Length: 511
Image 1 (tube, rainbow, N blue to C red):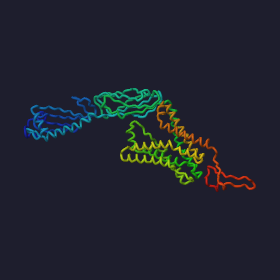
Image 2 (tube, helix red, strand yellow):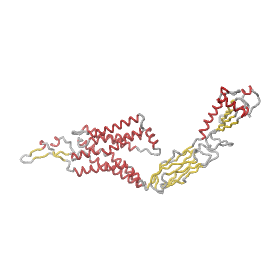
Image 3 (cartoon, one colour):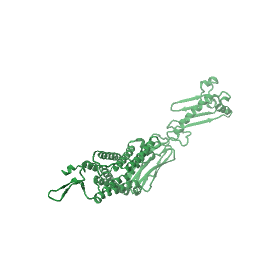
Image 4 (cartoon, rainbow, N blue to C red):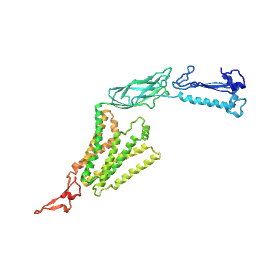
């Protein structure tokens, strides 16, 4: 029994009224100890809203599906048939209401009831989380590893978390399903760990996701693992060392050409189309690597498309691309400082570069305008780099063929590039065997094709230098002034120009 508020009793009676008679609406909030009463006309339906605070249970009438950490609202309505007509009139037709029903107080009643619903309903469906303590795992065949599933929060019902393996023949999990028992008094902030053992059965790569039943309690949508099983750890170490060797070989390969240009004080024999395409390609490659490695916005775009992927760009990729662009730029500066005859970038080369720059400008404008993402712009830059890699050696090979000579073109650059390319392909072969992943070896046609294409050109340059145009480094200077008659003889002394010396420094040659 409740005592009616003073304003109601002062107008009607001092007799205590029951909620059903006084038409009270009570909104109780246990944590604050408040009870709000709103008096209105007698004999109206009674709506009681009781909000349970977080972590408490209603033993009398637990709602189905509720679990720890929820706030549940329980509503009870007891209408009186002889007042329903007046009640409907007061609520839906306030201007035509009969009797002393207050539409203002009824509005307050609905407002507080609606607020209670908003507070109660979302928390009744709240989900706790779970995560694994390791996301990337590497195993040997027949090797086991113990990891943990970490559970946040307890539940009043039993849950099952199952492993969904992309390739079940590669790994085995024990247990295959983790059972999380329910408890009568769940703790929403409890941290519980579950030990799981994984066994490597055969080499390969696989992804593992998770499924929780019954649904609606545990959020496992972001949980995943990447497991790699390999034959031998020694092969893995050798592959790692090879990676650093070809990284160094490719990085150093730019300097023999720079040294030859400096020693000869001439760039005659070095094709300018090759240099122009090279600086364009490495600029695009640097943009791609720096964007994905340093820009958080672009990384977010990448992981939104590949939520279980890894960043394909590492620090050594950034260093190599920037260093390659710098070394190529140094070589271009040498072309302005040293002897170059009438060499220049050809019309065909300028046209190709113009097309590439138009693609870059248009795609950058689309990205700035929000039509495409900046990640897509970087992909377009990488495609330009791939195209340049396919064609950049052609001008130099054709120039050597026309001159019937490789003088001025560094063979040291070719040897280092050949070593780097060969080790790169050998590393791919070792990894394919170690992980039994030949599909990726032959399936990645772009990477394998580019590596093989570069090796073919390197072999061709070696043949040009040592087989096709092996006549030597000395060439006869054909001008008559270079022929000196020998006194008392019918013979003449012919002066030759050596390829390692500046071509037109005739005074030093005659001296």
